[in-house]
Length: 194
Image 1 (cartoon, rainbow, N blue to C red):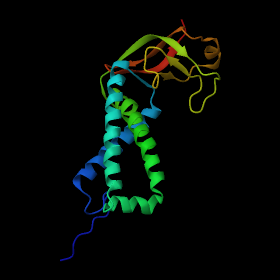
Image 2: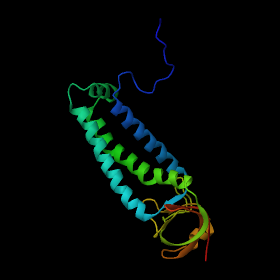
Image 3: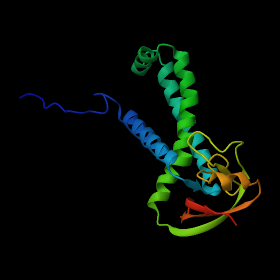
Image 4: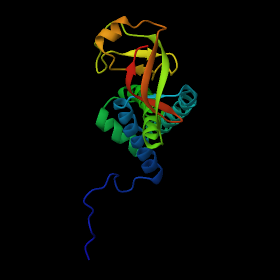
């Protein structure tokens, strides 16, 4: 009797279970990171401070695991990566930059944003202080951007402030944000000037 062939397999036959789990975890983090880019969620500083450590630790662990596979001359992974990329230095440089970047974006912004959307929320108005704003109104992907003091610096940007309002805002000024509040963050829908 002929063996039934599967139409789609994500992993190659013979892939170790640990590699499947690690790759699946990384892809979930990457997917959450992509969602985090497109939603307007401000994550509370108490949570971000802890997630920085988690992201840093997981980045270091993942880098060490990949390096262990690359440094082993008998590794199938090493031969496969060299065939795809060519230079081992390109791979190591890309890994040292790419893994931490993706882990920080995914764990510190993406995962909390997804969890924030799933948690019960209530309509709230929050008064925040403007930390600073860019020199120009028009920015790539974020016009009318301001940064807030009450939230973490990397993930404290609010976009969509009207140009007339944005021009009169100054550092240290208060602004009222309206949106949904959960225990881990705030997703804003609009703003009002005092």
